[in-house]
Image (cartoon, rainbow, N blue to C red; front, side, top):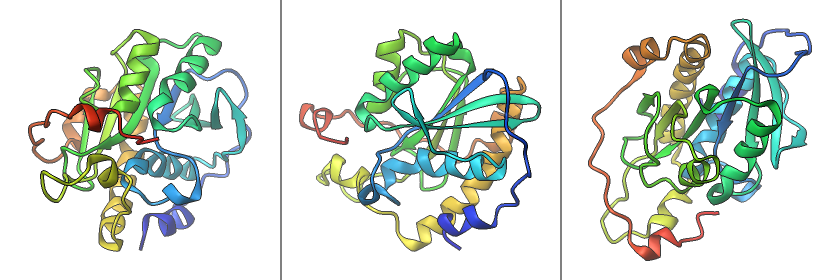
Amino acid sequence: MSIFDLFKQIESQSAPAVTGPPEYIIAGLGNIGDKYRGTRHNAGFMMIDAFAEKYGAKFGKHQFKSNTAMAEAEGVRVLLLKPDTFMNLSGQAVQEAMQFYQIPAEKVIVIYDDINLGVGELRIRKKGSDGGHNGMKNIIYLTGADTFPRIRVGIGQKPHPDYDLAAWVLSAFSAEELQTLSETAKTVCEALPLMLTGKTDQAMNRFNTGKQKKPKQQTPEQEAAPCE
């Protein structure tokens, strides 16, 4: 079963419309457009789509430079964001939503891809640097904060050192890798309710997987690459 089939099979809650302002924001990072569907850089979109499906939330309202939905999980109202700014300007979307609802960085969970983790591996943290990820880098730059809880989803390292970084993150997952990610999405859907209820340490202990490889310094060309 692919991750896209998973979205159809997750048991959705018959949830009423969520009323009231959100208490948390969850931002899944990726690139909009059909040509990016199923690519490595869109792992954040894949995970937040699965979470929305589980809680009966429907994307479709466009605000804060994002495709948005409202969900309620464990009694917590959550604004779900999929920025439509393309990856490298994700901070514009996150900053607008934070300012509008006056939500602090500590209550904004960001989900994004990580080339230093194997495909489907997870790393949950309460805060930290951008780790070389341009979407997270823009969020930290525009908001002036690095205290965002985050879930990093492994997409695997480049096949060899000379492989272009932009080409790698914009490449499609294989069918086997999508199968792995469908299981990862289920895990993310278990971790997020814990994080929303102040149990991030518990989520880290239960769901952090794999041994992170040492990040490799990006070249100026890679930094400037149109990872969109």
